[in-house]
Length: 170
Image (cartoon, rainbow, N blue to C red; front, side, top):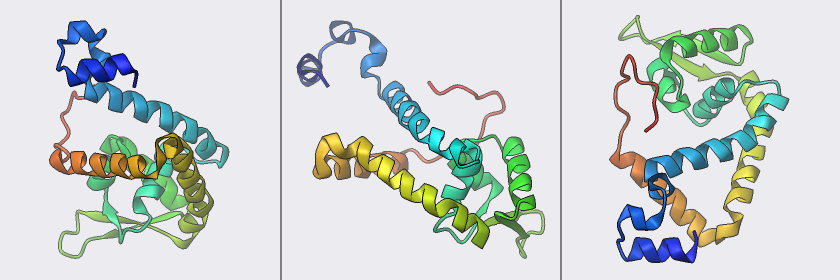
């Protein structure tokens, strides 16, 4: 952040005095940062032979007892019909398994298989290394604070149910 930006934000200046609106708009900044940082790592995902959606599914299932398609849809930022097809392919490849929920036979839980764990081990290590490179310029204290604040921000804004025509990101 430039010194001028910091001063403008601290002085609670009008957006016109700070330049373009989007240059200081949280949703825009988060989307841009996510897009840029993700794109860097997605090259490694694709080089490993996975699609970004497959990686997001596997990463979301790591450390989980399993997730519903609806929850995975939210975690992977993928529409449910598309995700269902991806999970079907992944199941056919033996990297995830689907099981029916006993209490509600219509609902399924997706779990990562041992083959899926092996596939994600190296990528997970590379994802952690990528995150460390991204955060390194800020130092450990600020990096920890940023992650903590983002977790808090997400907790304050839980996922909303999907809207049929919603494909925008503010």
